[in-house]
Image (cartoon, rainbow, N blue to C red; front, side, top):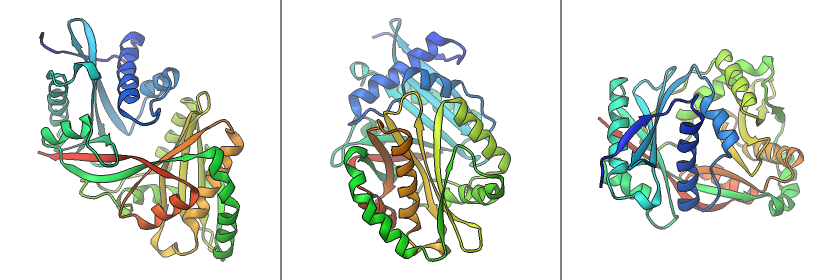
Length: 334
């Protein structure tokens, strides 16, 4: 067996970027129970998007002239200065040959050079079994720091149960209301919305992950909106508005306009002082209803929730979500 050669991907190089994307597509198709990898045109736009809040490096692993794996290291620039996010994928036919180990060592070296001391990665596994990714992480000093369940919602059949849920929400909202937003947060809500985003990482269950509160500003929010639009993604948001007009919570859902095979739920949060009014359920119903209106051919929505997050698990169960795999955040502190 020849040595593994690692090549840095130049995002302006279509061939190299395509090779990196193809590794992810092949590994996802082999290892995951649903199609969770973006289409090429979608992925290319996202990988090339300039960002001021993070930096990243992509690597290709090559053996005997053949691409056999890829790696990614991300470091945030505006918050979580200790943290680096790592990603290692190896094609199924080339595993257990040192490719993943070589990629991981180089990603860790690059993270350390940026002063990062906590390395985090996400892997997936069947509900009651281990996977190549979870076993690789454990073998290389990355214990599970946060375990969540990945859940799918089949839109074709789920909507029939929603009218009763909407009646339940209406009966409990009191002076609160739910407002839908698409692609852009109105200026009058931008500061409140940034506050919700900043609080999200520390208010939702995250196990032992070494996370700090994010630092969202209206300028960062505007950049996010512009980047999302440039990537051709629809950003469907619902906010809970308190009786005094301030924002009490939010949920977000994203789907690619050109390839709406899969919609993905991002953050969902209701501030503690505003809970007990069915806002979480009302927010998610609003975004899912809008998704059906705009993208009636979209078959499924995916979300993840920690097992200890009982209120959100109850909301997702009521909506019709079913568990399909485990989503494991693994972590190494140096």
